[in-house]
Amino acid sequence: DTGVSQDPRHKITKRGQNVTFRCDPISEHNRLYWYRQTLGQGPEFLTYFQNEAQLEKSRLLSDRFSAERPKGSFSTLEIQRTEQGDSAMYLCASSLNTGQTQYFGPGTRLLVL
Amino acid sequence: AQTVTQSQPEMSVQEAETVTLSCTYDTSESNYYLFWYKQPPSRQMILVIRQEAYKQQNATENRFSVNFQKAAKSFSLKISDSQLGDTAMYFCAFMKDTGNQFYFGTGTSLTVIP
Image (cartoon, rainbow over all chains, first blue to last red; front, side, top):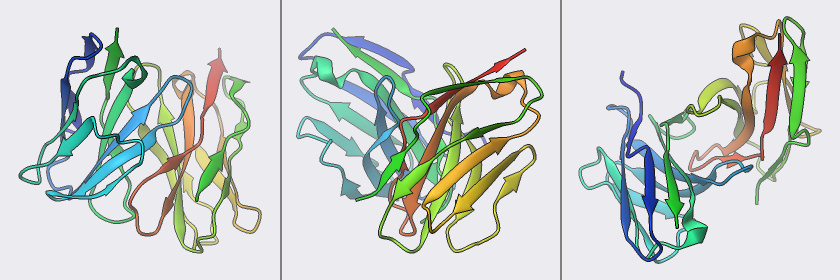
């Protein structure tokens, strides 16, 4: 069990650029979640997948955000035309199933200049 | 909508002493789960303890225990024999029994003083 991994750990980009983050969940976990955490706040839910199906999206996930989990394994989160307000820590988590403990990755810290 | 409130932004405790972190929540759900997660500085979040709402018995995990008061919608975390490694941000989290997402509080920053 290698845990949830995320890549990159840090990303600095200029406003207007596109960025993509990757999450590799724990191998047998069916559910994968994305959260956003800003300074001084708890994580806020963005979206989740059951295998390859994206089942729920938060209103926080604007049209500039898209997430995929093409083969039910790793997931990517893309932000198009980044804005300074997108600067945050993006956390990925996975779980076996409904109501089970979510295991978090180390996060990707995004800074938009 | 579910909300989670942690009213103590910062706390400190002497090494080996006991500290209690508060958490209250608001929900109309009858079945749900409650969690405490720990986020050490620059490190990832890890589970401290978990409680199923249908269980009346308070969860314990070594030095960590909870006081779950369902009627009062209160879920406090007690850390006994505090250690320097307990220094971290602690988040209280709520999950409906459908398990789609966490609702987190704003966190309590705990510092253990040697």
